[in-house]
Every structure is written in structure tokens, then in C-alpha cells.
Length: 303
Ligand SMILES: Nc1nc2c(ncn2[C@@H]2O[C@H](COP(=O)(O)OP(=O)(O)OP(=O)(O)O)[C@@H](O)[C@H]2O)c(=O)[nH]1
Ligand SMILES: [Mg+2]
Image (cartoon, rainbow, N blue to C red):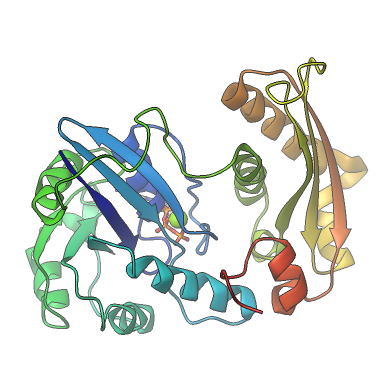
């Protein structure tokens, strides 16, 4: 049995979370066309013939503009200490190494485990000239233990990535029970379901200014006297203008988010759910150590 931990890293939007979903053949990670969709490093577990690979989905490495962004980038670096191998994801259409890619190169500078270059989005029209050019581009910047091309969207090449990673993993016992898909709590997943709908329903800068705080989570699994799952959540924004957008005309937007999230919560937990949703303003929360810590955007041991 080969078992180990593989970190998926790269700039925002290259398809790290999409690849996680393709590897696990399940929609476990939030995906969106907006950069900085993923906000926490989450371990997602692939079980295959003679292998268990713990893939860590990570936030996109970028040039941070606030303390939240700093946390996102630092949390990627934390995952590298525990990785047996790293996949650096890039896109088949890449024509130059940008500032964010250079941040990735810096983050990987001290990594001693094998790093594999993964060229994603090979289903796209701009992939006609093939991944060879992209291999050349990035291999000029740092050494890799191997390279491969795939499409997280179509699934083509995803199985080959597994085969490529196996020799890098130690022999040993699985780290997780084979029934477990994600190393996260139901409470965290409920927050991610909500954030996913905020991302898909709101435009421009607004989704970046929203945090979800699950204030109460009571499941019939834990409280057998309850017939319904009860979730009380707050959507935290920075300004009253954003609050108005989130609530929408006559409360329409908030209702839409709530209905969509409740549907997904019920599907995910198997319980009918009661979701109480509030919108709160916390000015400049993305710059506040105190609020970031409360929302789970702080590294263990940090003040
Ligand atoms: N055409 C195509 N689009 C893809 C593919 N993989 C991901 N995408 C799209 O790329 C966008 C970003 O995907 P994500 O999986 O959220 O990217 P990410 O790297 O996790 O982004 P962050 O969490 O922001 O760092 C979404 O619109 C996806 O649908 C692919 O293989 N082909
Ligand atoms: Mg992501």
C-alpha cells in the first residue's frame, strides 16, 4: 500500500479545486471563475487500488492586498512542510511566467520533496499547440520531478496523474478511514456550501468581501430529539452597501442564497434543514487579526 500527502498549489483560478473534485469524482471543493475561491487548505482523500493519497487543496498563491490574502498565501506554505509530493498547477494557455507564478516559485524554493508540473485545462481551444510549450516555459524556471497534462473539466489525464504520483509516496498504512472524503467538519462544509452560493450569485468585488460564520450547527445525528438540522449562519461583509447587495431588493438575494444552500445542506447531510441566515457588517474585517482568527483564517500558534 502506498499512502501519502500531496499538496496542489498554483496561482488562483488554475483549477486546483476542480482537479480535487475530478480526482475524488465528487463535488467536495468550491469551484468558481473568481480568483481566491479557496480560503482554507483542506485535505481531501483519494482511495484507489493499493493506494491512499491525501490531496491538499490550497488557496491560490497571489500578491496579497490584505491580512486575509496574507493568511491564504501563508497557509499554502504550511502545507508544504507535510507533503510527500507537490503538484504545481498551471494552465495550457500560459504564455509567460507572471508575478503570481513567481510567488509560487519562491514558495517552492525550499521544498525538498518531488514537485510535479501539471498543465491543466487541456480541453480548451488554446491548447491546440499542446502542453510541450508550457512544459518548456516552466521548466526553465525550476526543476521538476516530472510533468503531465490533463483536463480537470473532462477528466482526461487525471488517472495518469495518480499513476505518476504513486512512486513518490511512502509505503505504509492509510492515514484515513476509506469512507472519509474530506478532513473537515460538517460545520465547515456547511460554511463552504453557503460561500459557494455567494460566489456564484454575486458579482465583482462583493464575494471577496464576504465571510461566512456558522454560529450554531445542531444536527439530529448529535441531538436525536431534533427532527431537523438547524444551522444559524452570518454572512459578514465590510460595508452597508455590500449588505444591501447581499440582501437584495425586498430580501430576494438573501432568500435565493438561503434556498440554494438549504437544498445542498439537505443533500449533503440527509436531513431536512432549517437555515437561519443573517447579514452583518464588520468594517475592514479582512484586515482585523481578531475577526480573521474568529473566522478560522489564522494559522495555528499565530497571535
Ligand atoms: N476549460 C476548463 N476550465 C477549467 C478546468 N479546470 C478548472 N476550470 C475552470 O477554472 C475556473 C477556476 O477553477 P477552480 O477549480 O475554482 O480554480 P482554483 O485553482 O481552485 O482557484 P482558487 O481557489 O481561486 O485558487 C472555474 O471556472 C473552473 O470551471 C479545465 O480543465 N478546463
Ligand atoms: Mg480553489
